[in-house]
Structures are given as structure tokens and as C-alpha cells.
Length: 158
Picture: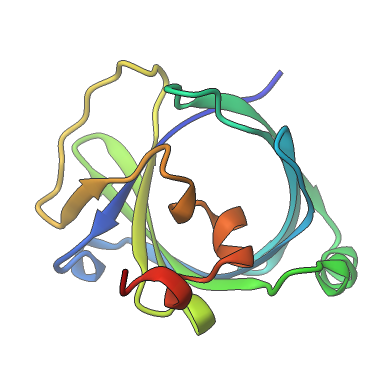
């Protein structure tokens, strides 16, 4: 059974100069329920379908299964998504022995930049780069599935 232990942070400052690689991502949601989400993603030249469980309150560990699928299938599935497709550039940054994935969003989520770090254990410590801002783990507003229904531009000025 697959699991994901992930923490999310807002980003401020120069992260791009530390990036070892970047690629574009387009993703949409075939199903959004309170129990799970089914996501289709085109990441660079590859495509994936992912199933994630909801986070239990106060937890950062959840079930996750991801499978590579043919690009043509992913493009057809993205066309089936009810809500707008999320578009972003992902920057990969190795820092202090961990990989940070920094997403710079476009379209209706333009201006939002979020860093994610996947951990082996919920209590695992890590070094914080100086561009890492406030933690937003568990704040549903910053999850891509929420952003597909309620874009950043709708609530960022609140």
C-alpha cells in the first residue's frame, strides 16, 4: 500500500537559482470527494493517474497510489475533468539532503508559489532554506484539488 507524508509551505525569495531541474505540469481531477481524489497529470513528457485519500485531521500521512499511463489517455482524461486544469512549473531543489518541489502556478492561480517536501516519517526533521515561508500543511486552500475549484485569484486578497 502506498503512502505520502508531505508538508507544504508558501515560498518567498530566490528558489529558482537553486533548482536542478524544472518541467511543466498540467493536472485535473476526475473525482473529488471528501474521502479521496483521482488526479490525472501530465508532467513533462510523461503522464500519470493518481489516487489519494483525504488527510485525517491533524495528520500529514495519507494513502497514495500513482501509475504511469499513456500520454494520449491522459490528454483524453484531462478533457473529462469538470473543473479547470491546474497549470504550473515545478522546480526541483536539493537542500540539506531532502528534495523540495516548488510549484509556480499560472492562470487563475497565478502568483501562488508553494513548496512541498516528502518525508519518510511524520516526525522527520529537515533543514529549512531561507526562501521557505509559512507552513500551510493541512490548510485545504493550498491543495491543488481545492485550487481547481476555488482558484487563488478568488481568495488571495482576503
